[in-house]
Amino acid sequence: MQSTQNLSIALVVFGVTGDLTRRKLIPAIYQLFKDKQIPFNLTIIGFARRPWTNEIMKENLEQGISAYSRSQPIEEIVAEKLLNSMKYFQSSFEEDRGYLDLYEFFSKNKFSGVIYYLATPPKEYMKIIQQLGKNNLPSINGWTRIVVEKPYGNDLSSALELEKNLHLFFKESEIFRIDHYLGKETVQNILVFRFANGIFEPLWNNHYIDHVQITVAETIGVGTRAGYFENAGIIRDMFANHLLQLLTLTAMEVPFAFNADSVRDEKLKVLKSIRPLVGKSAIENSIRAQYGPGIIGNTLIQGYKDEPGVLHTSTTETYLAIKLFIDNWRWAGVPFYIRCGKRLPVQATEIVIHFKQVPLSLFEWKNMAGDAPNTLVLRLQPDEGISLTFGAKKPGHENQISPVLMDFCYQDAFGSEPPEAYERLLLDCMTGDATLFTRTDEVIMQWEFTQNILDAWKQTPIEKIPEYQAGNWGPMEADLFIQADGRNWKNPKIG
Ligand code: BG6
Image (cartoon, rainbow, N blue to C red):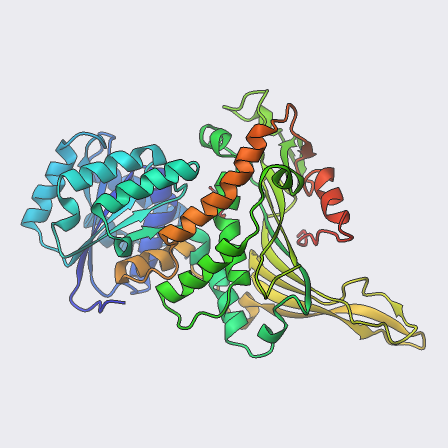
């Protein structure tokens, strides 16, 4: 990490008129300003196609801060100060003009470093990267960094192509690939929980763990993003990045130091050790489905095929469950069941560690705790916390074991909501800490694993994708899938 004293940084946001900038980036920067977390001069330049002026940009982003900022009500003076310092550059992404303007600006105004942030639709990435390179922008001022949002390519070959282009003009240490799940406080806490406590790690292996479940459930549907989602499906949208990253943090070995390369080296080893799912095994170990109409809470929900922009013949999956194995000494024989879905009954991200049964049931007691009394649940969002279930003697003359809970809740323990992922990620990028960003080899390994499944699906097309009712925990097939192994999904609590 670099010293931040006397730094002046320019942040160029490509796609400043878009949703990501309005909902996430600028509210996060506002919060950092408000909390006095930015110890250097920051100049933000918005770059986009729309014929906006500084004033129009300011109005739009002000609304974004008001609507999406973490701490409400907002402090007008802080927001004003931030927005007044912003500049708008109007240009298409492929023409030279805007880049020449940027060059001129940077020739006249010197900065310690410049960050180029790709917050546009992914189809623009290549044009922007090419133009930055062609116009010598990566080398014009002090250090340079480029932030690339997901989706990082649409498959293995497009990811490799993007990679090749980025490396024409940027060194690996200058490329910051965002997986916003890594910016979440509770996701970072997975490593603290595992490696800052002496009592859990000795149990964290195939001697004591029966299986692991990772669930990312959302109540939202595709909303206005059908154009993107139809080509992506949940496998590219969530599984190939967020879920595989959660898997790496759950399964990795202790890094020799907590720095970008050591942590990412260990995550990479996990990705390399996942047993590939190819052909028949990909089909047998993956369950995909699409939401149909249903009810969530009290709201009537339309099916995926009725969403604007979706064809009635669509076979795009909005739910995916996968069973995989990590072939290394720690995890040999331990299945990981990983699932994600839209329009499920509740928004919740959880990792559940199911410990093995005791080797022999000693007493002739009635085990009310069920078959696997010891589960450790890492609740990543919302209701952030960690709970451990174990069996205790139920009071009374009958010998009964009842499941009880030890619970840690972030809100109760620390009295505040964790910061937004983008706050942490933006700050880390400004200070040059890449620990929470994915490295090229990780992204490529994620795609290699995912591509095999995509290929298998393509070779075995389905005419009609299984449907689940919106508001249900996925399709019946997913229950049968895990039950075939004598296990059940542990669903996050509703409400
Ligand atoms: C994004 C996906 O990366 O993550 C969205 O594109 C998804 O489809 C979102 O809704 C979920 O993020 P979070 O932080 O709300 O869990």
